[in-house]
Image 1 (tube, rainbow, N blue to C red):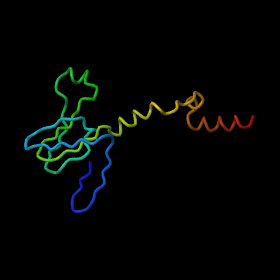
Image 2: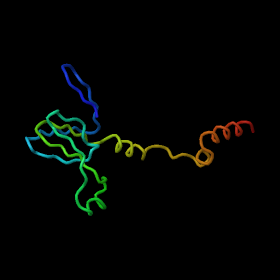
Image 3: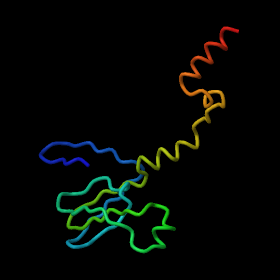
Image 4: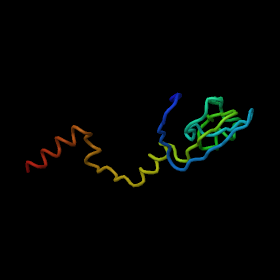
Length: 117
C-alpha cells in the first residue's frame, strides 16, 4: 500500500470497473482485499477473517477480508491484477512437451542440436 498526500495530481491505475463508496462515520464495508483500490485517510483499514466454517470452506475467495470503516470515500476495483492474470491465462498458448521436458537450458541445447541435423 502507498500513502499519497499533499497538493498535486496522483495517477492511480485500477483494473476493471471503478466503484466509489462514501462511507458514513462508523459504517463498515467488508470486501476481498484485492478489490480495494484506494481510500481516504479518514477510513480505517483492517484485515479480518471470514466468520463461519461454511464460509471458509465453500466461500471460494479465501479466508481474509478487508474491513473498511468510515468516514470517507473508498474506491474499489472489479478486476484485481490476480484475477486479470487468471483470465488472460485462458488465451495463452500451452507449452509444448519438448519445452517442458528439458527446462530452459535443455530446450536451448535441444534446439541447437535439432538445427545441426
